Amino acid sequence: MRKTRVMPNHLDKTSRRSLLRFLLASPLLFTPRPVAAFERLLAAAGENEPTAQEAREIIKAATEAIDVFDFEFVAERNLSPAHYTYLSMGVQHEVTLRANRTAFDDFQLRPRRLVGSIRDLDTSTQILGTKMSSPIILAPASSQKAFHPEGELAVARAAKRKDHLQIFSTGSSTPIEEVVAARGAPIWFQLYTADIPTFTRMQLREAEEAGCPAVVLTVDVTATIFDQNRDRIRRFRREDNAECQTCHQSSMVQDAIDAAHAVGFDLERRLDNLMILDWDNVDRIRDATPMKLLLKGILTREDARLCVEHGVDGIVVSNHGGRAEDSGLSAIEALPEIVEEVGGRIPILIDSGFRRGTDFFKALALGADAVCIGRPYLWGLASFGQEGVEAVLDILRSELEIVMKGLGTPNLASITPAYVRRKCSACGQSG
Ligand SMILES: Cc1cc2nc3c(=O)[nH]c(=O)nc-3n(C[C@H](O)[C@H](O)[C@H](O)COP(=O)(O)O)c2cc1C
Image 1 (cartoon, rainbow, N blue to C red):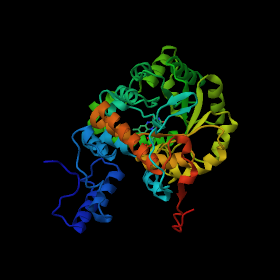
Image 2: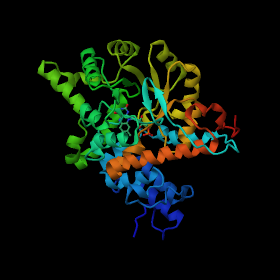
Image 3: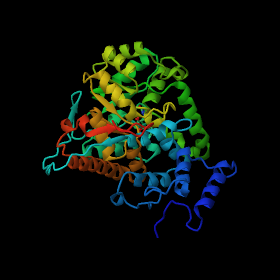
Image 4: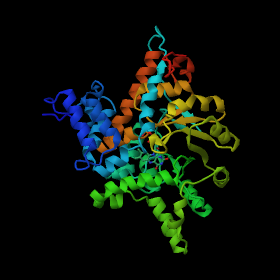
């Protein structure tokens, strides 16, 4: 018999809701699951009508998946509470995390009819010299061995099989050269750094030597919020400590700490400044490397303008999947003003909350050049390793192709703002 994850059938909606409220309130019965997971349960218990997503069955093979959410449930079942929390959590009240999904409802597609059949659909593109067969990119995510023993290598092999760009995180649990070898093509490098020039240069050299053509500097995680996240994970980690000892180690950061120790410098202590950066740091990084420089975590037209003024080569519109700050501002809502400000001068990527072909299409229509995904491929990884990541990429790619065919857009250039409109969330009017 297949296992489903909804509440028992013999409980009516009111009693299920009361039971869940009791569980939420009870410190004795507290289990380390993030707010979002409880809210899904509450929704399934009848706060809202159960959606297809709430009532779905747990799949047993990657080939059984119908959409990417199928993998979320397998990941939740496979992972320890600490690791699932690390994967799924947002910060604080998770308002931003939720907004990343709900905001898509405010953007509607404007389908055209009688567009004929498209035989040669082309989703390829080229960004900053990197050719891609799809605008769907694997976002940087640290500690992937927390989700599967093969971690970043399984992701690299899937990216190679399906030909997607992979962005390697500073916090990866596998050395960069091994990931590049497994991917068999250049990957981009995501940089978390500190205001310590020698440390930053060391990191950049490592990525350059590994052949990365671009560096994505993440600018949205401040030390304060990072500490809060870390404390939350640590609390859960105490419960499955053995598992977490090694999988959360970043080989790159650890190597740098060890190298600094060897020359009598306590880098670890100074890493407290991790990620507290300003535009001078951006200028220094831009001047210190031949790699193309993108800033990840930009959400306003003001910062987009500064990116262009400071000679940054590209922007990733992102709120870190709701893991940076609880602003409530979704990435898709931030996109239009950034596209307007940049005016096509540098490429714009986006991530945070993308789960469906229609989500990708909306962002491309609003002016994004490519879209990164985070949790969906990590769900795939946690569920079935490389095969799971491949299946997630297949599903998302095929969902995007279905929308493109349905709306009559044979290639990415033909996806224009004419295909999307925005509903005013206050008045319900579209425009
Ligand atoms: C488990 C996890 C680890 C992450 N690690 C990093 C990281 O090391 N560097 C970074 O820039 N972003 C990191 N991110 C953020 C992703 O790059 C991306 O912005 C986010 O996941 C996109 O939102 P989504 O998960 O809703 O698709 C991480 C996200 C998750 C879920």
